[in-house]
Image 1 (spheres, rainbow, N blue to C red):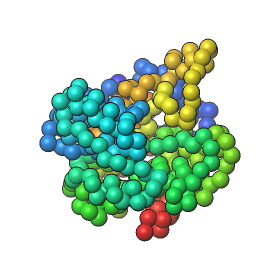
Image 2: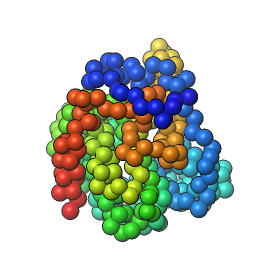
Image 3: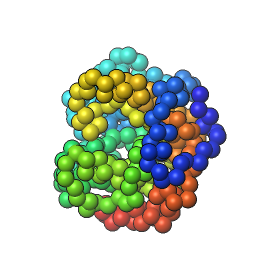
Image 4: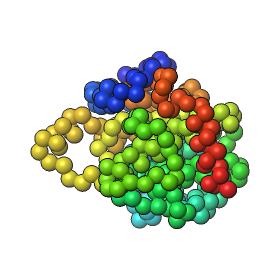
Length: 307
């Protein structure tokens, strides 16, 4: 079991070593979140709670007694998830339409959401081809980073977050591949989309850092859930040796939900970065996530684009 009270210094920006620490042995090292404390009377919102890790996070919060709101773009899968979780847990579960890539949709969702105790900023995309949002921003930046910033901003302004609300921002240790996060990044093909995804995950870390610094009354943390066998990136069918290695090394969505659930329900260190195999991680000098000036600049950029 990972000791989340123990601080671990992450590896320097040496990509093979960093990624090996994230993958090797993660099936046995990924913790299970305790079933307690109960969340009866609490309201939890999960973006992208209709599929993948988000679905399992929503299910886990409902099992603990929370009223759960699934905020998702695809209404059919959101309604299916609501029925499935409500039937299984007996919890009050509903959905709200949310397309994080479209700021008009984000603003409407923020108005529709109830006052919230726990917000899990889970939804994210890994582009397979270059695209832009309705507002003209690179699609991974718009969806994964800007959309969540605007959602939290609107909820704060509308008094939709309880005092001391917990905000869990999902990221990925793969952010270490990049040093910047901007709305105008251009690329070609799936490999370029992967870099856009990495940049957005770095932006998520900077966003979480500044959100906590500027709102000390909130409980904010960021989390690497693990390297998961999800459909992120449109991976499609995998066969042969690749399928074998994927089964051996990667964790499923239910396991990938455990560290985010821990961050949503257990005592945390405000502003902390939690990793499914390393525990509470301290970013070393030279790590792009540890740069406070870039975090401040990221916040200013997000503010300018959301006004």
